[in-house]
Amino acid sequence: MTNPVMPKAHRILHINRETEMEYTFRIEADFVPEHGQFFQLSVPRVGECPISVSSFGEGWLEFTIRAVGKVTDQLFSMRPGDELFLRGPYGKGWPVEQLRGKHLVFVTGGTGLAPVKSWLNKLYDEPGMAESVHLIAGFKNEAGILFKPDLARWKERFSTHYTLDNDQIEGWNTGLVTKFIPEIPFDTFGGNYAVIIVGPPVMMHFAALEALKNGVPEEKIWVSFERKMSCAVGKCGHCRIDETYVCLEGPVFPYTVAKNLLD
Amino acid sequence: MGYSLNHRETNALFDRLAAEYKIYAPKRFAKQGRYSDTDIVRYDEIHTAEEIVWDQKSDFSAKEVLTPVTEPIFYFTEDEYRESGAPKKKILIFLRPCDINAFEHQDRIYLQNGGFCDSYYQRMREKTRFVLMECTEGWDTCFCCSMGANKAEEYSAAVRHTEEEILWSVKDEELTPYFAGCQEADWQLQFIEKNQFAVKIPEIADKETLAKLKKHPMWQEYNDRCVSCGSCTLACSTCTCFTTRDKIYSENAKAGERRRVHDSCQIAGFDAMAGGHGFRTTPADRIRYRALHKVHDYKARFGDYHMCVGCGRCSARCPKFISFPAIINKMSAALEEIAAEASK
Image (cartoon, rainbow over all chains, first blue to last red; front, side):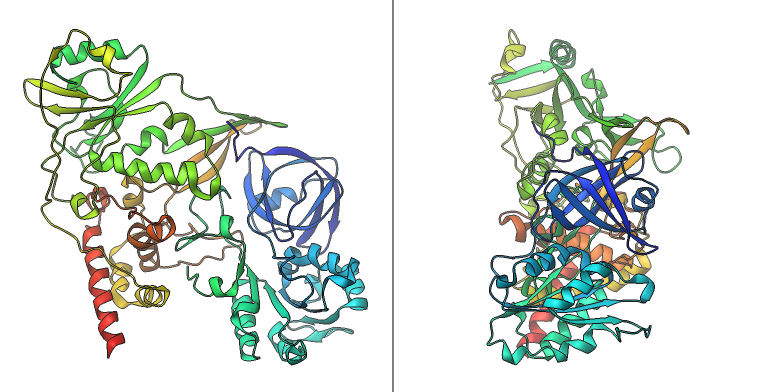
């Protein structure tokens, strides 16, 4: 009998301090997850929490973690060479193959950039994968900017709108992500496109409404949910909304499903 | 095959079974009730027929035998997780038809949902056999007939209790040898056919109607009444939700355990993520979430039965006298209103 909630020890290879509040942990592991899937990270004596994979490669996984809870606080005191415990990958990731060859519009808020980072890097490395890539990435302020080297690289090949909610700094726009959605040339895409929205619940709600207002049909929008989870395997009940379990059917949902998921 | 055993013979049977089985049944815990001088009836291991409470509905359900309120799932040292041990003996549970039906829902969540089989539940469940306690009268909080849960087929043996004897009907060949030499008796197991009242099960036509029902003012009264204590879900025979807690054995020790602890969607913070953002922030939101799960969401997912089996323990345990059947009937009334509004 295999135990689906058994965590295994994995070594921390590297820790990158993205911001004061967000660190990226590179972990030694052989998993090959789908873009957008998540793992349960576990610290014995503290607990477990679900975290999206922000990047992965040969023999490693990366998680970009915000210090907001007791498990994540404990993780921030760890150092390379220490071990943390993992189980996963869980959930349904982005429909990367289904969306191959389309114009892709990404709208992200804060750490919402993490669950699409590996996909964006793949799009960067394989320019033929999409007709074009548009990225609207928003952060609260300068101190909250994540993945600076990636943001700089993506500028070379993607059409980018980087924005801060309030701060005004050189090279950055000011305003919420919704402000830049009308600037996306949806009418030039010949209907062959998708809009991917990830971020805090309120941001996703208004970004989706703004996309709809700009003529994007519901079925072209994709979102990723964040919910409290204890088991990640459809038992504990925390992430259930109506008949849907976010850990099983999500975290990625087509908007046509997501719009009906009222907690 | 049917048998008649007096209480002394039943106790001798329990002694014979004890080598292979642990026997669980509703048992009285004197003066451990919620109010002074009241008892509590809950599931525990028994050794004699006299310990079994026959004439009262247990305050808590039989699910606690398989999924205890607190259960260690891992023991850990700094660099290792070790799975907690499985039970060695088989388990025999005395329970009523509604409770057997409730286990069907427990099975579905723990063994099947999402294609993941929970090994903690499975290792208990595969050792478990049911002894159905005949139940023909019910109590004032019961509505099993409305939920179609008044009859059950999945049992190893059934029993009828009277002052003088216990009648047994044994289906499971594994148990038959234990009855060698017992007096045979022909009797017919009965099921309750009508409760003291019936509920009207809501039929929610589509997502649009569901959204309207969620926003209906009927839920608001629970903001004043419900205290979000979670007594209803703890007593519920079909609720499965749990959370995970790590426990350190002593202040400086590296050793500890990871526990699974029953959790409740009725308690504030059930859906709160790290950082504090939650979704159902009022008692009304949470009652609505539980009620819809029991008589809509579960069936929408699995297709056949509603989750609620009508055991009525939630109503019986509620310190604010919130009746779950009344909630169900109010949902049906609200849906009629919504339908009337739509046809205008």
